[in-house]
Amino acid sequence: MSHIIIYTINNEFFDEKSIINALSKIKKELKENLPINRIKIIIQVTIELMQNIINYSNIYYDLKEKKRKGYGSFSLIRKEIELYKIISSNPINHKQKEILEKKLNELKELNKSELHNLLKERIRSKRDYHQKGAGVGLIRVFISSISAIKIDFQPINNKEYIFTMEIAFK
Amino acid sequence: MNSIKIEASQNSPTVILDPTKGKIKIAGESYPENTFDFYQPILAWLYEYFDKPQKITTIDLNLFYFNSSTVQVLFEIFDIFQENRDKTKLIINWHYDKDDIDWRDDFDYFAEEFEMLTFNAIGENRI
Image: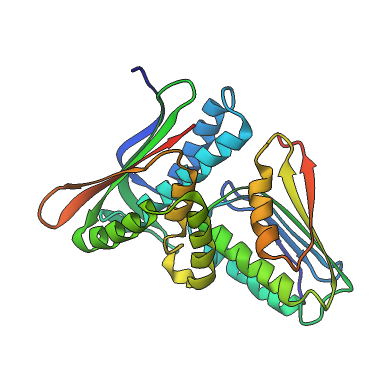
């Protein structure tokens, strides 16, 4: 099955400018083929996943004004005329893996309506602004996907993993 | 009380907070890296403004793309509006792109959650 890479960054450090540049190019590529409602979903998931790489990659360095660069990869692919996929990955440590696996397994069990309810509940209960969203972004990503999100934790060694998410959009 | 005017950047919105006219405007894209730091002075201004608001307060929200941290901040902003709704006549204008057939998703999300507030939906052509 043929596919077209709309946008990709492989094994690089992501920062604020990476997101701005990516969105500019993705919007330009998609506006010819997709209506605004569908572009909006892809853009918002791109923002969430790139900000996750910046904030949670295990390979990072701190910049001024509480800003960070995080190491990872991101691709937006068109697989068929109507099907788009985002694949995002970054290294994490064992503790992060345990936390993420628990969160993701909970989310995988929920239908869209339950995800919406959980989103509101989390927004209401996690008003801790130092936690950079505290899982709210992941719930929005699950709501956006048209099918089960593929998740993988590939071991690098006995302490670190490559965490990968693959999300599909119609 | 001072006015606040913040110019839009590529990932943060224009913000205009005018206490003498009772005008509040947030417009553009909102995914700054430190979203809460960006919105902290805005929240502080809102809390102070609603101590002695104008008779009419007009809010214009015109957000294109926003991250999950912005959604959390918007909940706090609407909480402030809801808590102070008896002190001023609130006019909340929710601007959306006429070409976005799913515009109601976000609109309904906030309108249903903050049912004591009245939201006006205003469709417009965005470039």
